[in-house]
Image 1 (cartoon, rainbow, N blue to C red):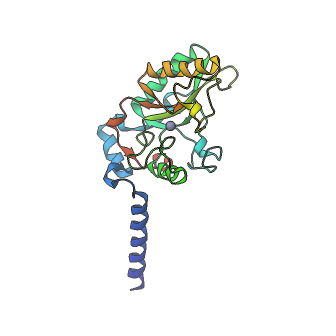
Image 2 (tube, rainbow, N blue to C red):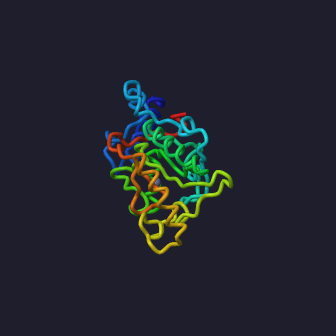
Image 3 (tube, rainbow, N blue to C red):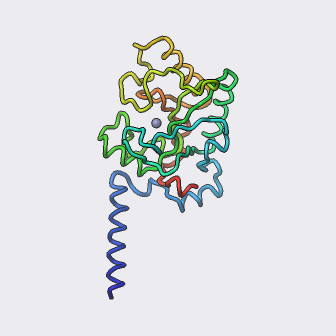
Amino acid sequence: MKTLLLVIICLTVFSHVIAQQYKYIDSNKVMRLRDYQKKIADSPDYQLVEIKKLVPNIVLDIRYATRNNFMHKAMYKLAKAYVRLPVAKALKEVEDELNKQGLGLKIFDAYRPYAVTVSFYELVKDTVFVASPRRGSRHNRGCAIDLTIINLKTGQDLDMPTPFDSFSVKAADNYPNLSKAKIANREMLKTVMEAHGFKINKSEWWHYDYNGYSNFPVMDIAFEELN
Ligand SMILES: [Zn+2]
């Protein structure tokens, strides 16, 4: 009897936790591990692949795996960058093109589990710089990337309009009152990304969406599960 009671309590708590997590969105719209595993068996493009596997020389600075982010705490247990297979292939083309000029990409964030988007929203309560949990982020679809350009010789970031995640009007894709160098660097990133199937976010110079993002669902699979 005691065991039965314990099972009932555990199930109630568990279903409450799940309901809380999906209080902003229909849970059928969020793909979880089991459905993902089924899907990738016949649709390889759905695979979330580690960018490093396809683009070994890309530099990672995964801010949400550190305390150096606007949440001031680590949101990811692993400092990894995953995107859907076609997105990784497109990034490889961008990296190759930049490498010819002695430059390369540095990734701040890529695929982000839906639960993390909910945590961001609950802290910020704003949907200009963080995605609405009602539709999820394109990061949740494995089709958005936050990045900058580095000089391969020095390892330094190019001079961009603002730091990553600055939440400033100066981060807008067309903000004009900046030095010539900042504008030139922002435009160089935009040109190379747009040539390979990405579109810049209007409020954030560092954020790009892959053009085919609507073909992929919002996902809630932690990095440890993908690993
Ligand atoms: Zn982003």
